[in-house]
Image 1: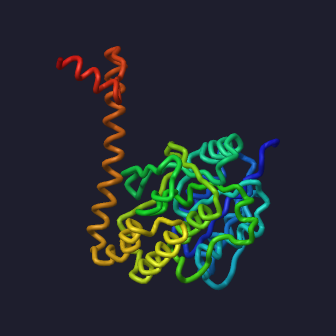
Image 2: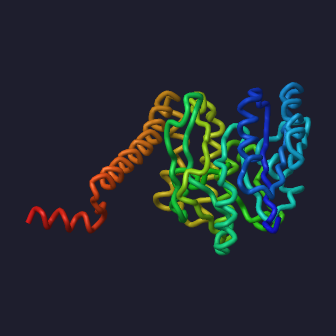
Image 3: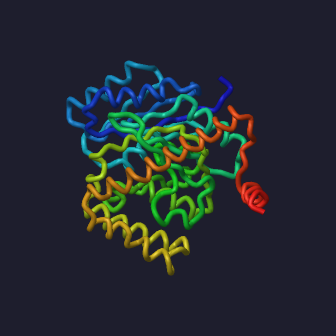
Length: 307
């Protein structure tokens, strides 16, 4: 095809909802960028769920399903996929999310033309069974301090250059990194002197339901605090502010899931409402023939009118 091969990697564990899984898989198979291989690792699913995953191979010759009997976690699953991946690029995908049709095409084009970046993510829309309810933007070029609150990349939206894994160290697959393997891998890559980028486009839909907020158990939050401490220290961002964010996941243990849900939902909803308001302003300007004014120009215009 004349375009580089992209290896899409996805770990699956007991995904009982075949419709949700097929929607995620179809969003990759229907990409505008067609030169892909789709490597799916079944991480010890129970027999009936494993059958659903295995049947995916019948959908498209680009799909390869592999399996282990024992559940080892997402990091170990992704490492298994990376070992057999043949692509110049490695694209992440999760078993319950949705990629926009042009997602991989846009990311590959960016990486092909911007060699200084080792990986590329995107902004996301948040959705549940009722549809899209919010948005989550990410910094365009994250810096070390952007890691304070949480990972500055939507992990399942990222496309990596395959060579970032050639150093023999993929995802850190330990009990400590369960549920935060994405956070750890990006901080590890930054410490190697590599830099990522986020396309400022909503090219990915991240499934975030009301059930999502109660999944993070206390032990996972304690492990996240350990990972934050170790990596902030190595990145030189621990003192003084970094210490506060090391304690952030521990503080979350004290909050009831319903309050965490309220905070997260409020943030996502507010962003989508702001976008709608901006779109309304643009439409009004178009209909009235006015040129939108922003930034310092708006301040200057306001001063002129008041003066």
